[in-house]
Length: 302
Image (cartoon, rainbow, N blue to C red):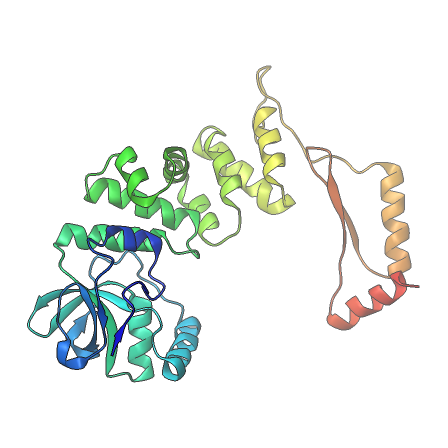
């Protein structure tokens, strides 16, 4: 069966741009397997993993869900492979789909067949990885750095290749200068890229870590962090010079404390007032269980 050559099976923009001929015919006939610049059904046993894949961990639950979907619907977006020899191929992209297909017990999978050397393989895998929507800022930064280091690209060349602005690439690469603990916090979504970008300009590593602790402890916004840095924040235990000053947590006034106690008594719950450096803040009502939350909601709705 031959499909319309204009249909590309959901191929990602970044990877598509690297393919020399994106208008090649797509065939799913097993007897035509192995034709370069086509999509063919390949034996799953003839495909090996990509040693250049920057993604090394795969969430097991997500893989199992994808495997169940593939078992029912098949693979919607073909893998991309390079031909190594007769009936032997290596993944360029699509390792998650490849692993899920193995779990689903598939014998054959659809795949674009390309010709690529090792550097092109690395480049294609990294660019395809960057185009994924679920990457965090540190993973993107590491992929950028690998493209620069291992593919000998300048930032301008990289900007053109991944269709990102030079400033976006520079901002990501600057995150790699942060302490490992802060990079891990970005990776694990403890803080945002905006927090991390602000911390880059905070000063030395000790000060960056001190402000990071404040972000986590006090749930500071990006604007709060920028205000701390702008006002010359130093750790409270450090000596203070005329040039720098410690910006402590905004105090709760007597009237605000009275309100907090009154609301806590009314709701039979612990109330916290968290004030930000920038002047905003929030009132937090704590609850112990779903039943406790419903009780508080009922009181507030009276």
